[in-house]
Amino acid sequence: MEIIASLEILGALAHPTRLDAFRLLVRHEPDGLSTGQLVEASGQSQSTFSTHLAVLAKAGLVLSEKRGRQQIQRANISALKSLMLFLAKDCCQGHPELCEPLVAELTCC
Image (tube, rainbow, N blue to C red; front, side, top):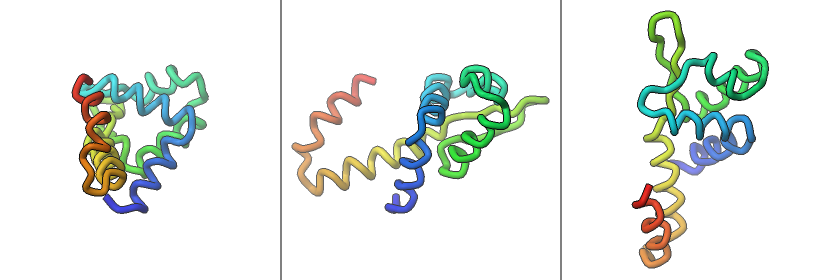
């Protein structure tokens, strides 16, 4: 992952509404949620939430697919994985002992 891509993802998640929506989508993998369900969970208007959803989609964190008459939103787990690996590998700089506590906590997920 490049620095620019990681900054775009981090920037997209740096808002409470977007972070909450992404976390909700991660919890609903692999089925995802309809856009309407996300709007309802956010407590915001459709137009306001659509702006947040567009930011997440532009950053590559949310994937949209049409199922019947509904748009289903899904978390892009591979984008999350890439970001986490980028940050861990960059921070550790060849010193695995620095990342061992992080890896140990993630293995229980």
